[in-house]
Image (cartoon, rainbow, N blue to C red; front, top):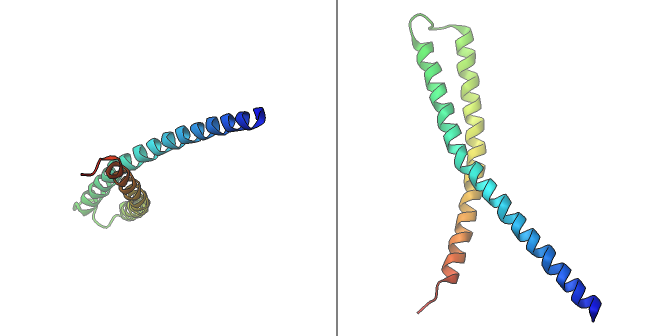
Length: 108
């Protein structure tokens, strides 16, 4: 009987630690997801700025600026794809949280 109660206590402790760790990881994930939007906005602003400089009469057709503009657009597209994967996962997590909140509310 002692072995069973010891194993049960150990199992409960390990499960509690795993649940705590899971919530900690979810908080970090949601923080990254929220900040991804800010990063994307900054990159879009940078791309627009380069585009505006490139369209000035003095720099129009400059190959270095053209390459920089193309590279910044590629980076923006890459970050956008990355953000989309974060957003879809974030939506799934928020749906799960909403369902859990609805389950906890008493029904009449």
